[in-house]
Image (cartoon, rainbow, N blue to C red; front, side):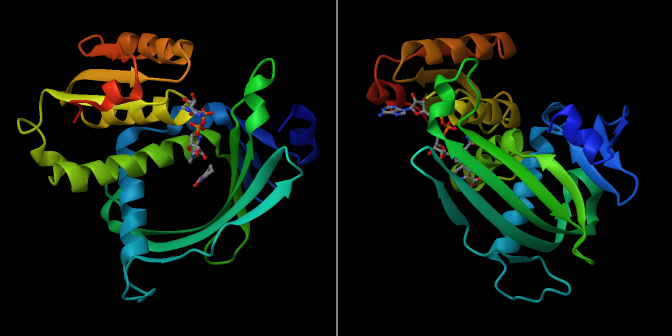
Length: 254
Ligand SMILES: NC(=O)C1=CN([C@@H]2O[C@H](COP(=O)(O)OP(=O)(O)OC[C@H]3O[C@@H](n4cnc5c(N)ncnc54)[C@H](O)[C@@H]3O)[C@@H](O)[C@H]2O)C=CC1
Ligand SMILES: O=C(O)C1=NCCCC1
C-alpha cells in the first residue's frame, strides 16, 4: 500500500508497533517490515501446531473444542501471466501456548489472497513470485479488523508446518525432550529459492544444536552460494556445503 492509499483510507501511523490503524472503523494495516519484526519460530510453529490440531479434530464440537472450517481455495487465472488464489479459513477454540498459555482460547476468521506470477523474478529489481495479503475479521461480528502483508507469513507458515511434521514424524519427541537426544544431524536443502531458504532457517532456528552440517543444492550455483553465505553468517558453528547434484545433496542426510 503506498502513501496515497494510506491517506485515502485515513490510516494513522502507530510508531510503537509500526502498524497503521484507521481510528474511525478500527482497521489495522500491518506492513511487511512490521510483520518481519513480529515473527519468531517458536510462536509460528506453535500456531501451526494449533491449527493442525483444529483441522484434525473430527468431533466438530465448535463450542468448546478446537474447530476449523476451510473451503477449497479458488484459482483466478490472470491470462498466462499468473494466478490469484483465495484461501478462506476459520479456526476456533485453539490455544497459542507460547504466546498466551494453554488456558486462553482464540478464534480466527480470515481470508488470505495470494498471487503467483513466475515472471517476477525477471523484474529489475526482482520481487517474490508469490505475494500474499491476509484479511482478518472479527470472528464474532465478521467486521474487517486488519489487513496484514502476507508474503513473509506465507513463506514462514509453510516452513513452520514442515517443522511440526519433522517434530512429530521424524523426531517423534516433544521439543522438551530434544536436548541430548538429537545431535550431529545433517540437513539437506534441495532448491535454494524462497522456500528452500526459509526451510533452512526454520529447521536451524527451531532445532538448535541438532544439526552439524547443511548440504545445499540449487539448479543455478549462485542461489546456493547466496544462501550458503547467509547461513554461514547466522550459524558459524555449522558446516555449510554446496553439493554437486541433488542426489549427492540428499545422500546421507537425515
Ligand atoms: N513462496 C512461498 O511462500 C510458498 C511457496 N510454495 C510453493 O513452493 C514451491 C517453491 O516456491 P518458491 O520457493 O517461492 O519459488 P522460488 O522461485 O523462490 O524457488 C524455486 C526453486 O525451484 C528451483 N527450480 C525451478 N525449476 C527447476 C527445475 N526444472 N529443476 C530444478 N530446480 C528447479 C529453483 O532453482 C529454485 O530453487 C512452489 O511450488 C510454490 O508454489 C508453497 C507455499 C508458499
Ligand atoms: O499459502 C499457500 O498455501 C500457497 N500455496 C501454493 C502457492 C503459494 C501459496
